[in-house]
Length: 345
Figure 1 (cartoon, rainbow, N blue to C red):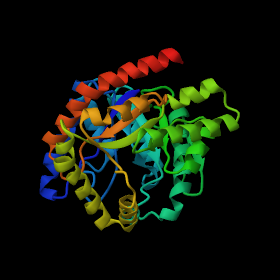
Figure 2: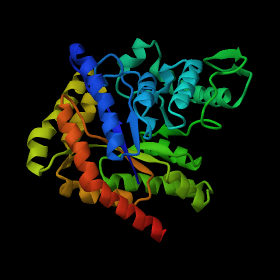
Figure 3: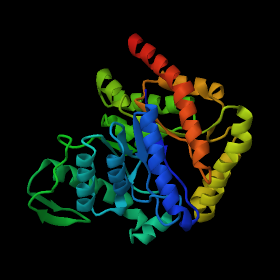
């Protein structure tokens, strides 16, 4: 199972934006130095929830600041883009990073309606726009003269430049937020990005994926290959001791929830629902406390896990220490379990 960093730094104070952006670059470099396989970027606008805002632009910077680690999007809010601009940006980043790109696509935020209004996009059209844009991306990356006549875009171009570095184009993963969308992608044999707070939750998602793909007539080998390219995202609050994680680290996570809930009624409702549940929506504790969850996840056959270490106003020193602690204490055991699972299969 591959290990990815979910780079999602919050900046509430505009005066701190430059510092937090610099810290995000440093966190990505630390992830590479520590041996992580990928760093994934998120996209949020107008609210400080993600300091660097524009993942395509920031990925270009990381392409120059790193050398080995893969760069992923989790995700580009596709419906907010003009498809030709998006195709150019992704192709350029693919060239800058020399094929290290993983393109995660989603229709757009399900909770931040101010992002749609800011870009003058009707959220009710987001899914249709998403489907049409993905079709355009593939046309632009694989064809020369491109003629498109659709519901939202009509154009003719001689050729999209630059051409993708990866042939025919970088890997595309769709984000799924429901069992129905997960099953729909499984029937097509497409790898996905999913969220699951625990290993049992991820295992349920994988079972849904397998059953839907099997019912669609896909061969077991193809299903296994698709799952090996899927990633699951999760948040951790990690410290050397359980007490420090709960007393010092966890309040930063709750502050993040409060901050986002104040900006979005949909997010506020999600937080209220979580509070009525007995378990936390985040792994919190020492390496020993969360070891079993990660080793169990490795046994599912999923391709990788994307881990968010920094939440809310958490200082970079706290989250960077957590990243290093994870890679020193937990990652070797994940590697061992993954190798045993591969040998058995």
